Image: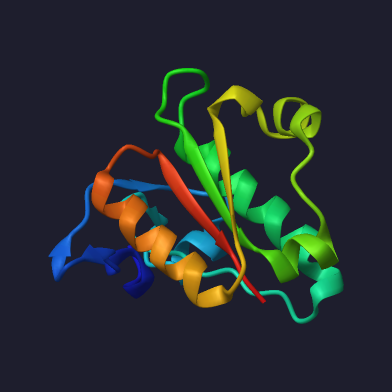
Length: 137
């Protein structure tokens, strides 16, 4: 066992047992063992034209973290600017590419980025969602 094997992902200062691995040893090592199900994961793209790839990566992580058809719904919150530039999620693609039933998706659109943050904060407090994805520029 090397030094990297001793990494422990923490949530609120305590070791987190609610971690899932991505299947990529180097990515999991960089994340401290995997992705914390109860934590915040930020994914950034360099330019708006790359937002589809970032959204696809986020959807892939959500799909890995949830159980098809039995997990709570996914809340996808996007600013109007992002939706205008990058477009909306394509429901048939959610099922075909990610195994996410479109019926499990709730989308919220906000006029301003600060409003997306408010929606996310309120939604996180409710505890009714399997994942909350925030898409802002």
